Amino acid sequence: MPFVWIRRFSVPFVWIRRFSVPFVCTRRFSRAGFAGWCAGGGRGAAGEGEKGHHGAAAGSNLVEAAGMTGILAPGIGGYLLAHCTPADDLLRDLAAETHASFGGAAGMQIAHDEGALLTMLVRLTGVTNAVEVGVFTGYSSICIARGLRPGGRLLACDVSPEWTTVARQYWAKAGLEDRIDLRLAPAVETLRALPAEPAIDFAFIDADKASYPDYYAELVTRLRPGGLLVLDNVLRDGRVLHPEDPADQAIATVNDLIVADSRVESVMLPVRDGVTLVRKLG
Image (cartoon, rainbow, N blue to C red; front, side):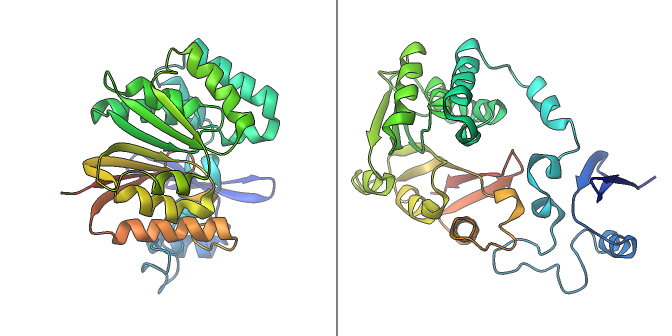
């Protein structure tokens, strides 16, 4: 059976088996409309399949899906975490304290599987000079700093003394405080004050979305050839297809800038809310 209709909360869900992987689509279709969508390879009605203004295929089932459960079948998120090297006690304690102290704002903290990905990327690329834009309570900082080569340094940029007080405490508990340099100032100012030569091995952007194009512009010129830049939240729960608010428009803009930038090669991954890996050429 190629698909099954499942009705939850009056919203039709569609199971699709492609490449032997079950997929759930939360796009609302009539049955006839769904048949046309399948016939068109999942890209919508005739005339909608070409790249639109924001560089994504119009009607893409991936980015129209809402968040994690729209991209993956129910339960797969937990399965991914269960099949990733588990977080240690320190990271679990940090996640718990962040939730207890900051409530709904704790949603800004990256999930453990994304943190593990950051650590692995930093280790694989032999990083000694790293930059992080957006610290929050320091989870991603720990993941990056743990992957640095001996003597490596992380420049961590944020504007919140409250959030980064927690970060500093956990950096110290992790034995990483001597590897992380915290700058409390608007990140664009911090980045523009860095030397102009390309010396950064790795950078991670996970901060205010409206400034992503500026962060990208400042970092990509300072990234060494072969260096890696990682951007979080590049799907915006699917709103990049039809961005309306300034934050979503900025993410759509930077997504287009990256794919058109001849200085880099990139790949966008459906990890959590979307992660783009950008490698500097040369």
